[in-house]
Image 1: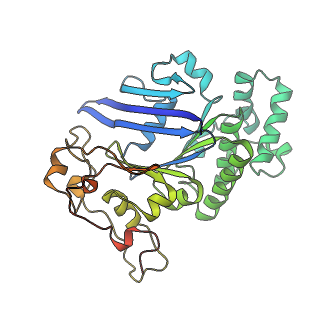
Image 2: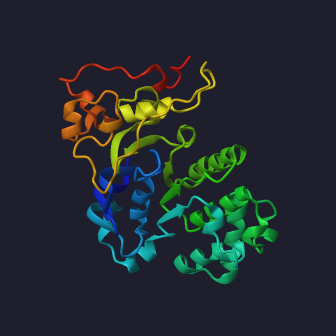
Image 3: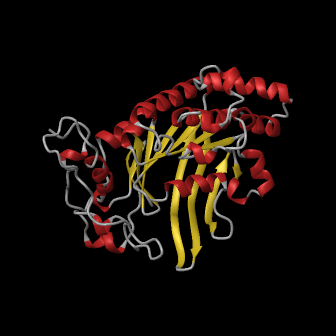
Length: 339
């Protein structure tokens, strides 16, 4: 497969009054053409910061890429100027943000907001851009698009607003679409519709998708490959089947065990004890060691290298070392394992 986007040893920090927050620490990832990659992990693990670093949308003055490369079609975006990034954002790489109401301008019609990118990046006339906007609204399932193109965001429901945001993101036929928690603000019925829409649009357009989420149900519905992130680091990567059915990292076990299961006898949800690490003073060993029931002394002192489980599956855990005791994942941590 053709590599479209590559992150290599990416480090992102924020300068705060309390000190430097090392939000992303050595992330290496790749995205193939037409692929769906999910980045999962609990809040504060560095998922959104990684995606915003790709778009170079880190907060001015406090956020910066300290080290590493972000290669898009051979060009290192980490070193690109703001003028170069303006040509890439929206045209080559687009983003869907969490809350569609705060993503849309309440003073502009839906049509004008879609037309903005078309006129800037594709030099369309006003009439051409409006016609394309109507077609995009039709593509994302907005009824009566000829009328609704002239309406304002407050006249749309939450699900319809998210469809509009997707239409804006797809307007210039980007090669990469980053979806940052695209269904968080929506109820479960609308969530399912948006996921079906994104899957259908990917089939039609061939756009590669990076899905940022903490919802493993969303991952199972949309992604082909998964990267599990914790403490600003990637702790496991693999195909959806490998992560759900053959997980190797104890943090992945904890995430899977905490999913509600319809066939489970217990009504109590399992949870990972403890709290995420302080990224102002990150641990020198495995970031999950303090919360891991299988942690050994080496876990606290040294960060393990990623071990190849298969050609598509890697995990950074000392339990995979040949000298480590053999530990099987708990039954609840394997999909279909809980009875």
